[in-house]
Amino acid sequence: MGYVGAEQRGKRIGGTGDGGVDGVIDQDPLGLDKIYVQAKKYTEGSNINRETVQAFVGALQGVGAGKGVFISSGGIDAQVPCGRSGQGELRGART
Image (cartoon, rainbow, N blue to C red; front, side, top):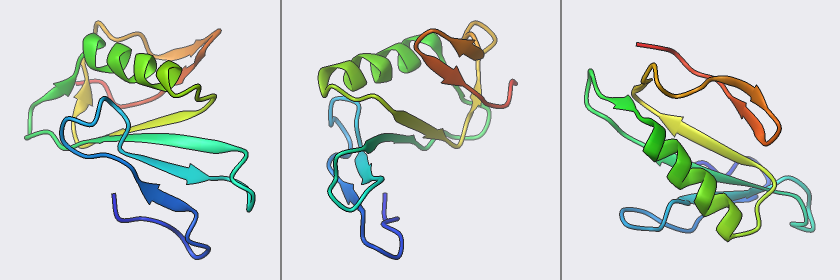
């Protein structure tokens, strides 16, 4: 992941085969409010599919996360529902 910000609040906790969470960012100095991060590097023309998003949501539930950010170099398949729901929001570029 590489990004930790000026106050060093980010930490890489995974990588390839990590179970769905690559890093965590502490939003406050005590580390009580966390944002979990998943990053995917796709080749041009490849997209995030529904199963990939569902796996990340499952990983967030597994660590008891309240917040997560999915970052990808790819687009989002049409079958992935974007917008707000009771459990969060998905934004991205459709392909």
